[in-house]
Image 1 (cartoon, rainbow, N blue to C red):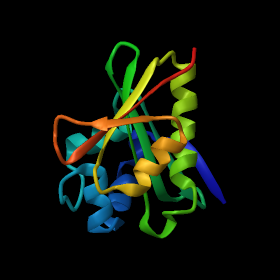
Image 2 (image 1 turned 180 degrees about the vertical axis):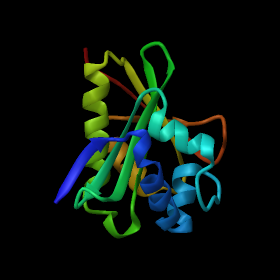
Image 3 (image 1 turned 135 degrees about the horizontal axis):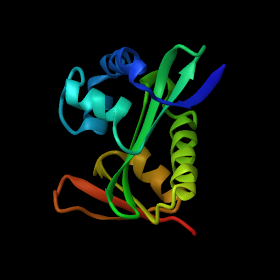
Image 4 (image 1 turned 90 degrees about the horizontal axis):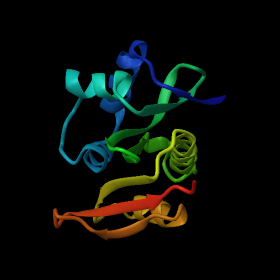
Length: 151
């Protein structure tokens, strides 16, 4: 059974296990660097930081996807999504991102943004499907994803 829920500090070990279990390509697409695990600061931001971090779990135990947003300025958040390799291409990323967008709208967020690597075609397709505009970023290897949230 699949469950979506907000992360809490007690989920830190599960989050770390999830990240360690991602393929090097999936970790690179999400974190833009070839890390093997999260630093204590990254883990704290995901499980305890400002904004919202959602996990998709199976059996109320194993994390198979993460989505988060954090405030960058008043009315604007940045988002990130990553799905376990075995679950990619099955709509879980869309489900997570839609849940984030719904929460952002209820929280009074006006704009949602993010970045993706140019070669991340699945993320670009998902962003287009959910109404994000895609433009070049200051970093030539990245694309900027932005969308207004209806009031």
